[in-house]
Every structure is written in C-alpha cells, then in structure tokens.
Length: 331
Image (cartoon, rainbow, N blue to C red):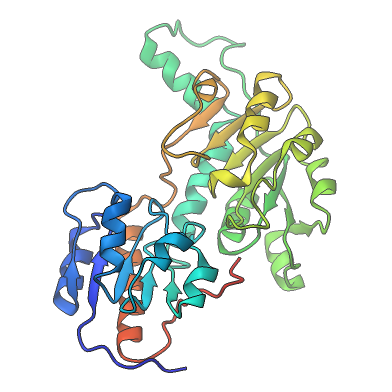
C-alpha cells in the first residue's frame, strides 16, 4: 500500500558513515549525523527514535521491542545500513506499522572474498606463519616446517546457499574444492550444475561428509545455535570451521571445547557471539584465524550500502514501497 509523501523526512543516523554518503543524506533529507564512530547509548537511541521519521541504524544497534515501543508516532521507517537485520525486532516494527529495509547484494562479493580467504588461511596456517616471521624466531625453510593441509580435492560444506553462499561456491570450485550445501530450498538444477554443487536436505548427514564447513545463513530464530554441540560432534577432527556470517549461529562454547580437545582441526572466524568481546580461550589457540568482523569492510561496499539506504528512504518518502523492504519472515 502506498505511503503518504514526506517532503523532507527527518533522518537520524546512528554511526559515522563514509563522508560521501553523509553528504548526500544531508543534501536530500533533514539529517542528523553521529560525528563519532561509536554506537549510540540506549538513552540516545530512545531520544533519536522519538525525534525522526527515519532511523538509520547499523548492526551494532539493538533495535528491540522495548526500543520500538518507546518510539513516537513519527517513526515510520528503519533503513538499516547493512544486510543483516537480526538486531531489529521485525515483529515489533510491523506491529507498529514501521517499515524496515536493508541493503542486500552490495556486500556479497566482499564477504565471499573474506570467507574464501579464511578457507585458505586456516588449513595453510597463514596466521601462524605470519606470527612466526614477526617474532624473529623463524630459522629458515625446512621440509617439515609449518606443514598445513592443501584444500584442493577437499569437500566444502556450505550452510546457506543464498547470494553469499553461491559466491563462495564459485570461488571454492576454482580452488579445486568439491561443493556440498544445505539450504532450506534446493537450488535450480542449472545453478547446481554451474556450481558443481550437491544438495543435502539433511544437515546432519552433510556434516559427517565434509572437510571444511562455512556458514552463510542469516541469524534468526531458526538459525540461532544451528551449529550446536551435537552438530559439532558430527564433524570429524580433521574439519575446519569457517564463520563470516553471525556469531550466534555457532555455539561458541562448544566450538572452543572442540578446538581445545582436538575434535576440530581449526577455525576461521570473522564474527563473534558477544562482539567485540572475544573469549580469551580463543585468543590462546594457534589454529584459529581471527579477523574483526571485516568481511564487508571495503570502501566500495560501504559506499554502495549507503546508496541503497538513500534509495530506500527516497522511495519511501515519495510514497512508494522501498525496493529492499524486509518482510517478517526474512531469511
């Protein structure tokens, strides 16, 4: 249903965005920016949603039911800066008649690059090798030095075969990995053929057959703790676990226990359950490659994300349905 036009909506942005994005927002809207690169405190968020037509949050903002309930009648659009919306209570927003948008697609290739980098880095022990060189303790090449495992010929299991999962599959196939995937819905036969991918309707069955597991499903009620202690136990001790999606999809305690106990070969992690806090036990493990949630951190990606946010706001302000409106059952 068409929305009434809003000539110059009041827009509040919760985090410092690229200068070009902020400049365009100021030109187009009645925009209030956050001058510092830090998330708003809870009280500041409440004040913001009571004083705007459009809120532009990021993944670091918790837009829960209580916060949405505190919003005045003025708030009509939450235009998220990013694709993931697990930090927004979609049901509460819908109940209040608040439209939620995100920015799908623009970060696909960047995130897939990061996942592939981790898929290579962990078995080949790149982080360990880099630390060895920096420590000054490297004594030179030797036949048995820094032995890792090749990835060519190994089986890659992908959980979540959407845009990012498919982009990872294309990269992995070029590295000689065979592609296995679990998804709610099977891909068309033509796409499976292009990717050389084998669908597993049963996630548990797939986990017992693979050498590397990479996660590319959104975080929601269905996927929270999807890779729990029971499923981690299904993975062989030779398996590497890669997560560049959301920390809450993996039971972090169970993963750490398995890594410490030698029941997993290693892990590559770009996301964390309690970001930015990281369990000290993970920091002590040499077979874990860790990056600071930087899978989408390219200038090009951030600018494209900003463009999508602006487009969503403009469509809404013109009385049209935004192109990236998120539905309650989003996956």
